[in-house]
Length: 441
Image (cartoon, rainbow, N blue to C red; front, side, top):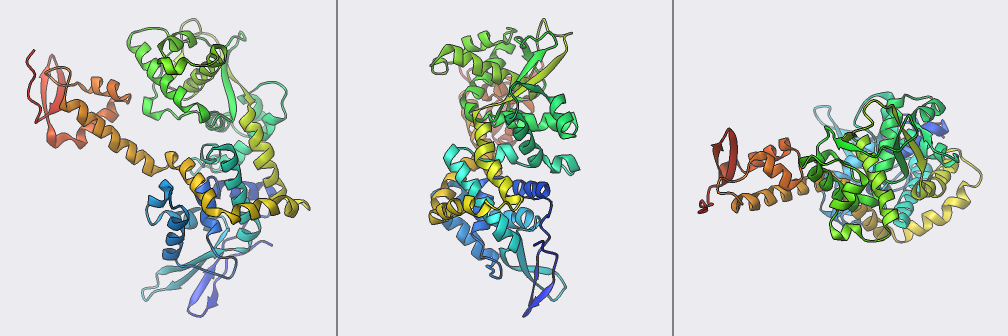
């Protein structure tokens, strides 16, 4: 039953619930948008069933206790409240209990599951946690919403799900234009969705020329190294490939599967070489889709397109996650029998599932990015305290050492500005720490 906004008196408190969609596609989009990674799913499961409420402070305490032993336990005290208010409440899965203060301002005093939250949200939340645990992945890169208010992009989680479903039925690769035509959306929307799914390693996207040849030559593009999104299960190889491309570009050497392979560290060359070449080809295509690379020599005047196919992980997401979710949003008669063992299994050991999901999600969080910036500034401080050259380091040299864009290196230098000295040599600024004595050449 669809819930409508209410303002029912509950002693001195009122309860508000926003409507949950009736249309199955809209339900699917709402669930994928609000429960797109494990910690959000856990948050919903920590709330009382319809009619019960806990305070925002109690929610935070439960959140931290449940995630004990995971990085998520150290997150801001407002994290769980943000998930609840910004995602779960806005899409009709949570009821808010509130009062009005003396000045007429709304004050939240409690959160609880809505009827839709219990019927649809809690079941979907348990499925999210089971899927992440069994596959060792966070669903964040697959179904995370885009930071935009456009209608097509707000529906990005649903679009990605529809693309996976479409690809799972294809016997041969398809193009972005073909996908856009089948789904009735713009090619730009499909391109963004394909990029996200490829980064999560759910699909393979290779750039092919109009002559039917796979692109084999690349040059550096405009995107900075720190803008590159890691590719699912190939994060280490992606990092090594980015470093190799930066080095090859600096030495004016063509970027190709072979030159990158030659430039990989010894530990990166282990295993089956043909399989490694195949993975490198996919990584280079993905880096080109992200703008880190451009098409190289011999292909400048040739038309190109991306050929896309689903891979093993993408197929598992369809059968193990999207198919059960489809039964749920359609109120299929088999829903109860499918979800009963999933829900009982997850709730029986929720802290375990929470810790797993927390550790899988944390690298995508803002807290992790802040930590990475802090660590990078520390590495820069170490470099500047013992420069290889008596003059110190230029911004370009620091950017190369850290594997970041020059603008990012400037930002890091700003954080150390009170401890720096600089000198200009042949029109270039060089930096080192004030305490560093000049080396004797």
